[in-house]
Length: 296
Ligand code: GDP
Image (tube, rainbow, N blue to C red; front, top):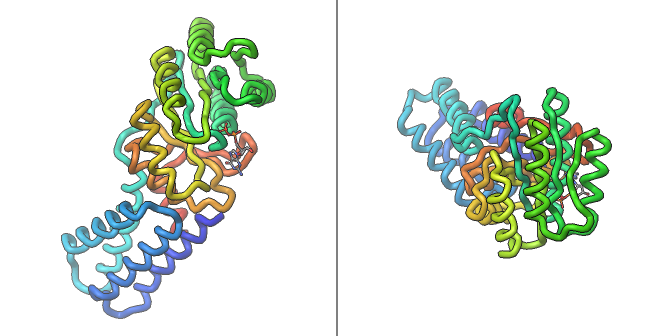
């Protein structure tokens, strides 16, 4: 995973400080320069890298301590904390409520991994004992219905969709109404993903949103798309008010930095990471443990 590469580079930059006797301004600047380069190479947005650099510098000036061990520790702590802060927008993700119908709508560009993520999401909650179901409101992509239904069958997860109905808003509305009546706890709504951020896609999402009144809107983003995900996330956020983010394809050549950009663009927290095509290749996301793991 390329993320490990980023971790190695960041650790190496910090390690270098251990090798010098005096942690001077120059040493710090050099370290920050290396950190910035590693983050940029990992596709983190240039503006965010600049902000991180500034935040660490400000903290160091503020917490100025004598040269030596203390200073090194302060720098390491500042680095971990500021990096974690970047990944934690400070808003809490929607908290699923037991014995209630929680409607979760999934949005994202075609191919981002939305349908796969929905299956993983359902699997995750099913294993925890939640009553899950799926609604396929993607009438745009031929095959979406079958793909979702096949996953639903494998997971023994009730499914609502239609071959003949062409109006996704109607399907979403009816499916959610039926599952609410049947007291399902996690009602997952799949929506169409198009190639580009067309206005028709956004109009449709907004109509579905108004029809099903979701408790959470999850934006699925493909980590392999690099820098462009920040703008994508922003456009989706403006249209449907994203509540949480899932980053997919972190197993491939993804650099993962897109996740940082997406958090900054939406102010919505990352809730899960996807790292493969299987239902189990899915894990809850925690900024602090992510950063700790990144730094080995
Ligand atoms: P959708 O168009 O957004 O619904 O995307 P799909 O769920 O159909 O996924 C598009 C392709 O990406 C499929 O071939 C999936 O198997 C693959 N995919 C989805 N998530 C992941 C992931 O985390 N890792 C990898 N390697 N492939 C994934």
